[in-house]
Length: 137
Image (cartoon, rainbow, N blue to C red; front, side):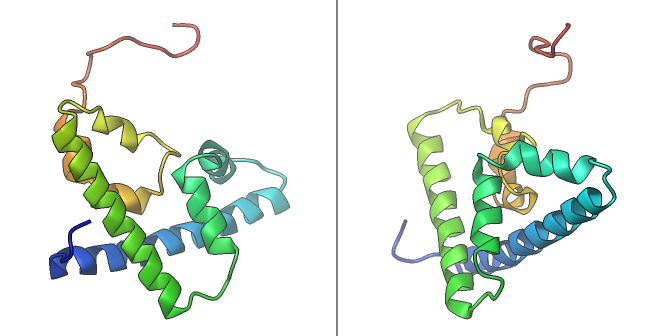
């Protein structure tokens, strides 16, 4: 990561860190509601899809401490800044990365996708291209 970062990127990652935390708390609340109603639905599916990926790490990080001290907020924003820098570095080192895969449900918290939307949208496959890999197809 460079020694300096544009203020706009710092502000953006600070906000996204807040949005990720809120996404986790909302997701957990929706999962609890589905479990209490004994009606497993979209929230449980979203939680299950992300439990071993970056989304799951965000859930664990948020839930380990219900309080969110300023130092943790700053650390979360710095981690996002670091990730953004590494994605950009990788994009320069390995042209043609399949960044659109980062938009896969459950891979990362939806607010984090906002941070790298320019990479995700760059090489997304056009509708109708590729092979259908769904079961039974």
